[in-house]
Length: 542
Image (spheres, rainbow, N blue to C red):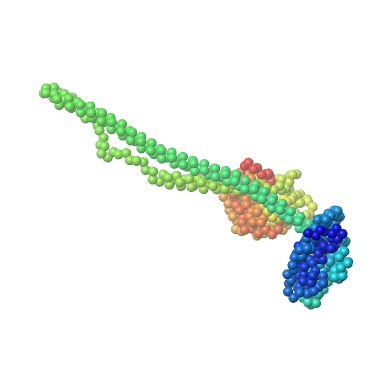
């Protein structure tokens, strides 16, 4: 086998396409040698089959034969090639595509070969006549993506119409009627757009982070609501189960008492029958003994003294009837139904009240809205009619005809709840009003005019509407709870001490802020009405 000539250089055994030592060298019909992979790839990318060195064109794709001798010499030469020292390629630099081992920095890229070369591997392009004709440019990464797939030329222009990069030939073919601009010009436009996007994206990210937190907060709130509902539901069902168990025990007791009554009757009858049997047995013995007497005198004398038969009952009509349980269960179930209905209403109202109390808000009375006769506490939680009209500065928010006062706080969404103590009062109004109500003149206090109010006086309890909604008053009210669901259009009132629902106005339409409002009523109405209305904190243990 021939030995490699150590005077030969790497160029003597290099493929003119990849510029590296031959790998599986083959020879074309025109006598030039290439790596099998390189020449195959080259022809696959060409329209016509030609030699990369002499440009000879073949009618059909050649089937190059393996050059055995060159293959052996290249293999021996490859073993003598020294491993090059570590290169110095910075991240922003383009590496040489043909360096073996560690890549060197590319100094040029060939737009014909679509390969980047370091100074060493660029040498054939500076020496070989055919390769000198190749177009060399400053190093570019991913050259294959920079070439027009149709015309095999550099993509240098941009078509705004179709938003694609094109080569010079594209402007006279597919994009003939389209305006085109240099890549740099479009780059500057897109860079400006990118800057705008870059400024917008952090804001969008922040908005989404806020939304994530909002969703998580909602889930956490939902978990708390679920836990609270489960706890309240557990209390309700425990109470209902207690009612059912009590009714069951009473039903069992009723059945047992009927059974015991029947058993007592039977026991008494049996005792009476046994006594009669004993009496009749004794008489039977006396009669039998006398019947055996043969002494006529003795018989007649004894017969006269024979006791009268013992009194007995006519037992033909006496019977012990099993107790009838017909209707017992039905009556028991009817009673259970009534009890459950009452208990369920009580429990439902209590559960609902506990639920709405979770939306408690801290509100204080606004002195700028208070009628001149009203006296407010320093903490803004109490109000009563002082009976004397004070001289106060003019204020467009102040009520001047009716002795009303609003809170400082208003609500334009969501749910809120507050409680007002009405103890020892003979008349009062309370509820919520919309911001735009007439504060100087008078009007009907109805939802239509912006008032959702509960009113109490000697005539009873009413919800102010047109017509009035009269409500049952089971006992003197001590404290009233007011709940508003702004979004659902609901205003509800509760008897806090009795834990029952009083009334709900539904289907309301709210389009402006709502204010809690209090009207303590005239100082002297049906006696002494000087007690204050007091905004009270919610007692969750009620």
